[in-house]
Length: 266
Length: 317
Image (cartoon, rainbow over all chains, first blue to last red; front, side, top):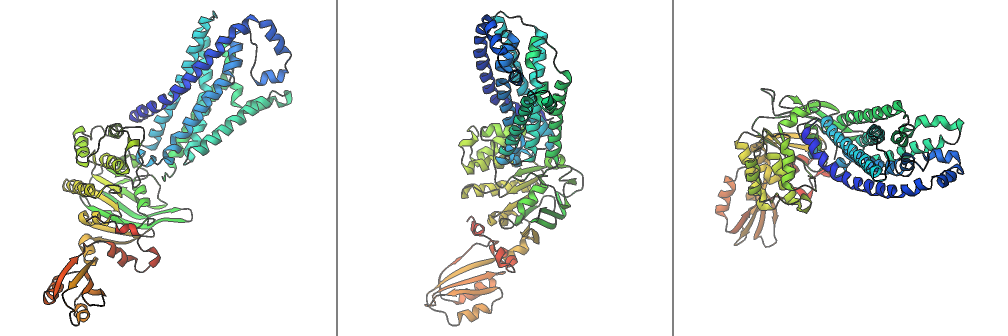
C-alpha cells in the first residue's frame, strides 16, 4: 500500500462519496418521516400486506410495515439503499484502472516509483473506506431517526446492520474493480458490473417464485443481504455475509494480479 | 541503482501486438552522461520502446534494463531512477499545477526540493496556482517537464518534449537539458523536432518500421546532413553546374532560366565551396541550417513509403 496514493485517492473518493451520502441522508429522512403513519396504522398495512402475493412480498424483502426495522428495511435498505451504493461502487470501482487509461493519465500515474499493485491497492482501499463512510452515514442517520421517532436504539443491532450493508458494498466494488483491470475505458467494466448486479437481483427475485426455484438464491449476493433482520435483531446469514466479504476482497486481489501483468498502452 | 550498469541496455527487444508490429530486435545501449537521440516518424516504434523502458508494456521477447534492473519485472526500481515525460501528456485536470507536482514529488520526497520546483517554474514561466484544466497545451507540457526534471533523476526519458512549447520556450528547454547534461544526467530524447536533438545529442538512433536502422555519433550524422545554399548572382556564371559538380559533396538543385538564382545542396566540408564562391559574381546568398531531415531521407531512401512526415520539418531557427 502506498500512503501517498491512498491520501490522493481518498480525497478523490471522499469528494465523490459526499454527494451520495447527502442523497442517502435526504432519502432516509423522507422515509423516516413516513414511519409514524405506518406505525399508527399497523393493522391496515398488515391487512394490505396479507392480501399481496407472498412471492412478491419475499422478492422485495418486505416483512412488515409496522415495525421500525420492517418499514426501514422495505422502504430503504432492501431497494433504494443498495441502488444508491451500487451505483457508487460500480462507477467508482470501474474507474480505478480503466478511467486512468481512457483519460490518458495512466502513463504518468504509472511512472512513479511504486509497483502497479501497490498503487491500485491504495485506490481500492480508498474506495472501501468511502463505502464504509456511506455505511456509517446510513447507520447514524437511522439511529438519529429512531431516537427522534421514539424507537429503541440497540447498538449491537446497528453494528450488525453496518456489517451487512458493508458486505454488499464490498462485493459490488470488488467485482467492479476486477472488470476495470481488464479494460481501457470505464464504460465497459461499468456496464458489465451493472449487468452482473442486475443478474444477481433477478436470481434473487426468481428464487421467490416457488420452492422449485428457491435454489437460485444461493447464486445471488442478495441471499446474504438481510438488513432488516440485522436491524430487528433477528438472525442473519453469517456465513453468507462472510462469503460476500471474501468474494469482494478476492475480486479486489485478482484485480491487482491482472493489473500487474497487463500491458498499459494509453 | 546497480553499480557499473549502463543507464539503458536493450537486447533484441521485441514487442508485437498480435499480428501487428511494435518493435523488432532492438539492440542498443546508452552510456552514462550521454544524450541519446531517438528518431523516427510516427509509428516507427519510438513510443513502444519508451513504454517498455517504463514497464508499461511487456516485451514479447528480448529485454531492456535500466541501471541493471529489468524494466518489466523490476519496474519499481527502474522508475526510481527515471524522470519521464510522456509524448502526449495528460494530467489530472482538477488539480492545480502545485498540487499535481506535490503529489508526484511525495513519491520521492527525499529527492525533490521545493526550491528546484520553484526555479523550474520561474524559468519556464508557468503559474502553478492555476487548475490544470484551465491551462493551455504548452503550459501543461511545462508542468510535465517540471515533473520530469524536479527530482534530479539520473536518467531522463523525454518523449517529444518540446511539443506544444513556443519557439522561445523550446530554446529555454534545450538550455535546461544542457544543464542537466553538464550535471551528468543521462538523457534519452525522442523527438520530431530535429533541431533539439541535433543541438544536444551525442549519439542518435534512427528507427524505421520498428527496427533500428542506425546508431551513429552525432558527428557522423552531421556529415550526412545536407544543407541548402541559395545563391543570387549579379550575372550568369559560365559552366557553373560543371564547376559545382566537380566539388565533393556539392550538387546543383536548381538554376532558374536567367541563370542568376541557383540552389545548391551541400554535404560535408564547405571550404572547397567557399573557394568557388569567391570566384563567382555573388550578389547575395543564404545558407540554410543543417538538419536531420536529410539524414532521414538518407536512411529512408530505400523505402519511399516510409518517408518522414511533414512534422519533421518543424525545426526551430
